[in-house]
Length: 281
Image (cartoon, rainbow, N blue to C red; front, top):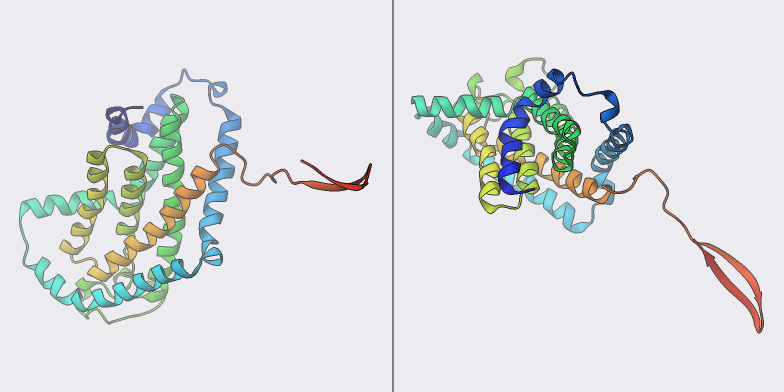
């Protein structure tokens, strides 16, 4: 599939997938490979479980990365106030337009449209690239989103707009004003950028998709909804989850991850000069 075709999928089918599927009454149930859907569902569950359980398999280098993220986020908190002051001085229709675009790109409905659009389009027109992309997006949104949702409630950090400063916390508060860390918009936007960037080979398209996360980054700080450190940590969560999901999905593409692999059964048999050890697959 060439680069132009992939760009068309991302720019058109990601937003039209649900409508195209619903309007196509002539497509029968038999036209969709039920076995493939079942396999995809199994791989989806496996990918989510693999990612959630990843910490038990991490090695020293992985924990160093986690430490670097935590340390880097802590350092960024020293820039939270100056960064907020910078964005409060910005005010124009151009920035307003960027804010709206980034806001919608990071909303949960954008994640549903992207996942459903790619996956359903891939099923309907039998395009593996689109179907696999939707599968990766959905699993990455789910894992990173669950972690982000739990953290922002448990941490209870005040949003900039509350005007109580970056060090005000009210854990488990029901108030949205205390759900600042980490950023949910940045979590969704980063997953979209990373998966789409990974699924294309063109450097130009990669740069385009990666830059979309930057739009949401600017949007949420311009609207005084998040601190800089909120955005950085939200992006980091998505980076870890997406990398794990993509790796697992690519490994399980042509096999059932829950099916036991063939094992060698060893038996001892008589031989001319003693005994022999025979392995049976």
